[in-house]
Image 1 (spheres, rainbow, N blue to C red):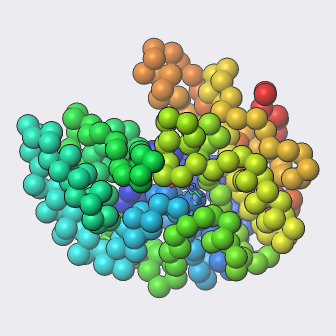
Image 2 (spheres, protein in one colour):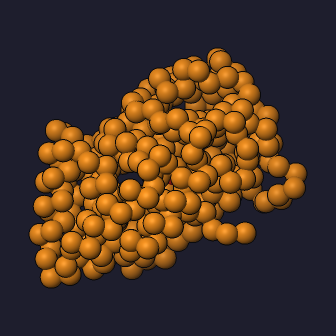
Length: 296
Ligand SMILES: C[S@@+](CC[C@H](N)C(=O)[O-])C[C@H]1O[C@@H](n2cnc3c(N)ncnc32)[C@H](O)[C@@H]1O
């Protein structure tokens, strides 16, 4: 099996966890929704391993959704333009990144955003209150090489073209036409990482608004899986979701904590996946899972 194409390097990508999450994804899906798309790792997985008639991607970050449109509809033009931007940089010119960043903040060109994401610290989007990209350059690397990017964008386009719709805005509004034959994969920003000074993503998402939204999805009898919180060593990233939601929580091993490693510690992380009733594990893909509550 060939590896899945991943054109957008993105902190928080579910690329490494896709195989584990996929065991809970039903076989029959009319429309696949990913309303917190980011780099859309699970949608790329679904496009390859399930056959949804339609795929709907949404993100509150509008230039990111425009980048997806370019990847899907004009992959060769995009690859050419990325090559031009990437080739313009020199290892001894750290200011090049800042010039592209200024240009992106003035014009919002999605190809500039792709370059910035490839070269910035931890591939992590950071925006200030005025919506300007503020993340700094990672001086130790040059970002994805153009030949690799070309393969990734053409591969992603081949998987998504002709059946994918992009929506920009709030996650819940993007699900207005979801129905019981559809499947929704939700991966909101971690509780606690998107508010305050460290605004990891463009827009924070308050926990109570997320919970209200999940109740609304339940009332519509929609099927969904939600990656929400996690645990690294002794540290929980957030309290469990309320029992009234009637979701089943599974803990998925998510590898070593890179932050702990940086701080000289060895810590394993686990991530929660909450499922609506009836999303049983696929019988053909056995996996041992723990069903426990995270400590408060
Ligand atoms: C944890 S990341 C998703 C990562 C994704 N699963 C992947 O594989 O790359 C969360 C995403 O949600 C977006 N987001 C934050 N608040 C949102 C909202 N209210 N509605 C829609 N998207 C939102 C952020 O811009 C970010 O791209």
